Image (cartoon, rainbow, N blue to C red):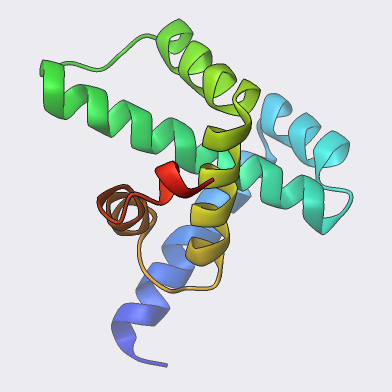
Length: 116
């Protein structure tokens, strides 16, 4: 393991240790980390949140409020074609094919949304 990998691993470890001592996060883990499907769903929500927030910031120069992101994710999940696009893109991300952002951009560029 390289020194950089070790440093990143320890940074993630320390962050997880801090998060596990926060009541809301601990409740999330205890309630929704019971099987891989639940964990995968949480990761999809987290990456979707991060992606929408970044996209909004690049466009508007400021961070969106929580309600904006919540409505965006709910809209995606309510639309069968968008939901399938997000799940397929997330699956590619979880297989370590590329970063989430690059996969989404590539899938949009290849008009994957139109094929569903």
